[in-house]
Image (cartoon, rainbow, N blue to C red; front, top):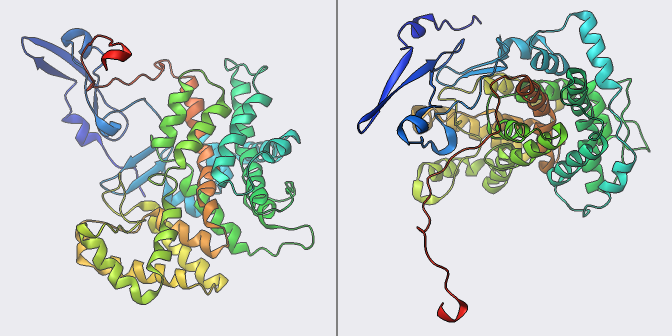
Length: 439
């Protein structure tokens, strides 16, 4: 896949725009990146006109300059550091993608070996984490535990952390990529009453995590190679996605100079929302609600009726107005996993019937409501025996690579400022305090 040519677009973009507010006019510069929409720099608008801008949800606002990920939602394009996601998912591994996101270039053989060695030998967590973990309720959601555990990492790596030192920043990123799977597996095992598993550093990243999560002391884990391959692909596809809610949260917290572990903990909290990382969990709940394959058409009909209140989860995307490029890749893997593992699960049959029906239904085709990455990832996790409450945790493990890459980039951005959005105040005007006897 060749890189989109944006030169024709750039030639028509003005270098500045003029905004007139009453009798005042201000000339605002226009910034253009390598690809994508150009942006009007509104920094001096309040000073010159007394006006701020209003953009609910920041849908038309660029909050930073970034060289990490590019998305073209209209054409279904996703690239990490200029590499199309299709090529990375076919040829790369998750750890190589994590290196790419952090460093800007794919590693050579020596760099790859060093990076993998560093990640592998920072997988252990301090034994004090066990005491902290045991303070949670036994039935706590794994994402709640993950937020707390990652936040507590700041207490282990704070006093000696010098954010001005590039090597210390890099090692913080390494520790997070290495330890998040260990912590995630521990959270899951605690939630089901299993003993905490330790990482086996003779295994590679994804296989090591699956062993930590699923192996029991009484017998070795028989793991299908397809399971590790599918999980690695899911991690690659979820590694980064530009300035989404959780990444923006990491950057916003990072703009204050906060500890990187606290920043990532904040990102996990944002990811937990059902409109963000919790969407694949919502897909499974929807499939359970549909129940049986013969109920699929009824669900399709209800989804088309706005008054029914029923929504098909895992269809469409806020950014992609075309087929989600990640969904194209993961769809093929989804069908391979189901065929390879021979899973007999009625919900998976419901999912496949729903996919087939939606792709043929004119209502969904016209509105480009295609199955997205959340739809297929939920099905794969289900087929691999991953519990529903762990789906968003899987997302968090993968997205940690993107979060640390953005945090590292932010630390060297000469334009970086503490995040401080403005507002339109809609409360009371000034009023006088009234004593209790007059209320």
